Length: 352
Image (cartoon, rainbow, N blue to C red):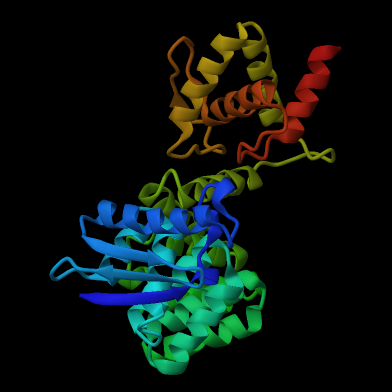
């Protein structure tokens, strides 16, 4: 059995119904007690909760119950505020526990309260100066606060401590890219993906570093790795970057328009305008699904087929359908395809 106490003023009132947030009211104290009782039920534990006008006392009485692991299970489920409140309660009794401080700092960072995250993580490193993950987490919080120089120093300290840690190498590479130092970032990101080849974010950052230093073949490889590993997350950024690299190779005239892309876009606009709005959306979705694994926009020899269209389409024609269809349904929406110039000219030409 273990008892924890926390000043009532330390409770996060955002966890309570709006009508029960008055710290001096009986409704507030009852709502706080019910919050912890609910946590007990949810975690399959038994416990006692006492709330006075000044403090909260919580006692877990379930044999072998691990309160820290219970709090972490909340964080893993995405219940950040619940998990944070439990960790803050545990911290009141174990103020220097490394697991409590580290996970509390990371959770505050994820919740966006960067000042609290920094404070907790600095306390962690004060008591446990060799806590590598805590050092990296502090660097992340500092980077999000905009303190890039100190964030870089923090990441470098972590890399010096353990150069094989992919998280430290990835974050050092990322902060260097943010400072316009892609050439310096590249070896750190290569080290990260060599140890953690399933890290889609590291591959994306490596794509950014290699693209910015002019190594386009390496950038394409890195972006494709990122896209394939996490197509619905950071892979979407990689897909946009791949499309940008492809269209960067398109020769454009003085008005910034590529004649082939303009022809493909005019065809897409005509085709979509001939359909009902719903049919146009369906065709756009089919094109987007076809293009989700990348389109070689500058390779006219490779053709694609779409259900409902008899003739083969080039990648440029598929991309034009995607961009035009999205813009017609939701003007100004982001497609990741730098074909807006061709789209606007196609619209103007169709109105003539």
